[in-house]
Image (cartoon, rainbow over all chains, first blue to last red; front, side, top):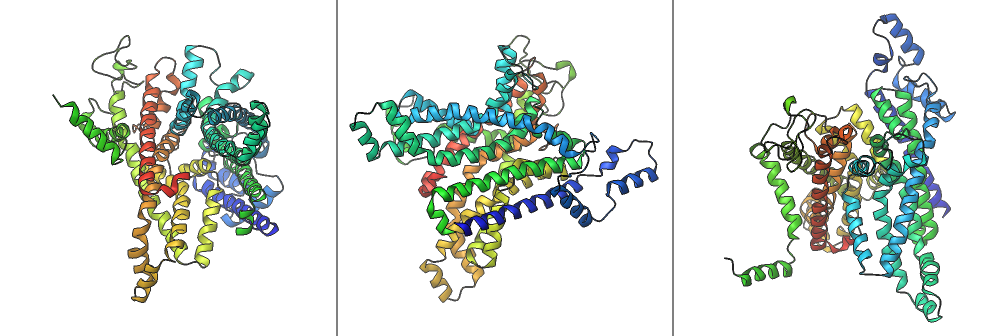
Length: 306
Length: 290
């Protein structure tokens, strides 16, 4: 187990380094930030001075080393657009993305889990077919389009919910639902198949023979045993939501990290792009690491194969 | 009149021979036809419109005209024509993207599986690292560097999907190279290259084909997503994702601009996914869990 953990940890660190190099090189290829930063009347000397001040005249390797050694200390440079430390800008937007992610997870758990359990218990019922239909739709509906359909339905036609921005609790409903939709289908299918496996076992028969109420058999005895794959899915879900948040935030004008990075890319705001990608990648890679460790902990086969 | 009995007979043989599901097949065939014949079918130009005919609603709504069956957008461009040309883009991106990804991923997987040395270790670590990078973020970054274009979308597709091919092909190659026909080929004096290309590769083909068909729908959604947030196919090219983005600000006055292309994506992807499942069940029931 320790060897597996060590190798997995090492891999995560290498991944993080690769991300930092890729981000650094790609961001430098996007164009000269001084073109956008400097006013049109700036002289060549001004530009050169600014370039030297920002360290953009040094070789790439030096710039990278400077960047990485400072990043470790929490200094990601100053945002070109806001003229403030990039990390401050990113931290400011963090709560919005976390809030959206939290809402999406709530949607997924509130819809996916009960429907999945019910579909397994009442196999072949209307709800079972309905859930399978939703699952098929979940993989085919593009998230940005679903967002627009919800806006049209609840914002424009029914005038029930606000369609963009952040503020009241009502603002989060549509983006949260859009972001969670894709994962609802996945969790539904997973819960259904895991529950079907468990419901056929001897101990469930025994629980029923003992005369336990059906509700207790299903929610206490069966679901607990079906929980293993569901727990690991929840961690993977987190990863998927991070990816999806960029699209959903753009559609709903939700002021989180996703919207920030799209804006920063348009302004060629190097430090902010780097900071967002590094922060999100760090979360992403940590979540992946957690999934693997959790998996190895729950399933000894993986531990010994490594 | 077609006799009822023969219709029934055709239906039965279709079912017994496990031919592909008809409705999805029809949809995909129609899509292919629309994409190929878009210049002939489209009533108007997909990129030029007349500002006098802006925001005409589709047939059946108040103010619609027979000239624009599915209405027009904010620049007066015909929605139906744009949808037809959009099919071209979606199909081209998915075909080219998946073909190239398949070649790149399979080659790496084949090399890694055949030489279980440092090549294998290196390739599999690369796969692990690739899988642990956040896909959309990388797509956004790549799109900015290479400027939004068709090529750029294909590069993003390759970047995101190659690990799954590499993993699959490596696993299959590992088990294939233990088989007797490989040992016999070696005894017969075949070189490594011949064994890989003539003996192992043909046996990998079904699995690769299955994976490819299962991914077509995903690639279409990916292209539309990237185009919609402005990092995929650039406007005014009528990609379905671009069309959805175009109508985003006008959803209150003109819902059809963004809703119709979304319906096109939805129907296409569902059909492709069902066909993909069918191909998987026919060729490789082992992969059912994927």
